[in-house]
Length: 298
Image (tube, rainbow, N blue to C red):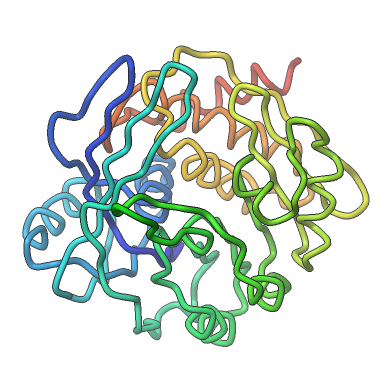
């Protein structure tokens, strides 16, 4: 079983190519669970959901074969995501769910644990409790730790100083280019190796930096791996990093020594997700393995 801690959200998404028309299921940990389930893993999402979307959420989780341990709170989280023609996006807050408080006892038997918050719902104290509860490797997507609500309900990014204290608790930290620059002060498009090295220097075992169409970088302290992107037509980049993490974890659990392979599986998985919008992307293990094989052959 793979556990993922992070609130589910219902987002409205608009890109130059497509719009959801209504709020749809999303979230860092949620998307990771959805992709991992389609790759054949048993997954459990731990989070908080408001009564306004609770029934729909339970139906969605059952339909996508993802177990959930979501406690009720006053409001469901969500964002309005608007992308421009250059791929830049704004995030406007549509709702904020309460912080996660519970650590299920079953997490002690987990194969892996994802910490993937969307907006400050996984406190550093909660992360420490999760680390103490299981020997499984912890994988961090820091996006929600770096967000705060600015003027007019729009998301701004900042670096929380306490992140340096919890970074050594994680086996893998995976950040996109914006998050990497917020954390390290280095633009990974300009100096990817240095940005990835600084992320690794926080104390994790493996640092991963994703760079959209430019691929990704993986640093384990002895080698820097350059992972190619799988070329495709992007309809909606929302969740690309979440599903990269899912593919990476899938490959890593079966062959932890082969980080290049894990990166190619991450790239392959996310390439399918971004061809669609919303939670119904038809990811399959056969398609991921075929695309990963193409990347491995380059």
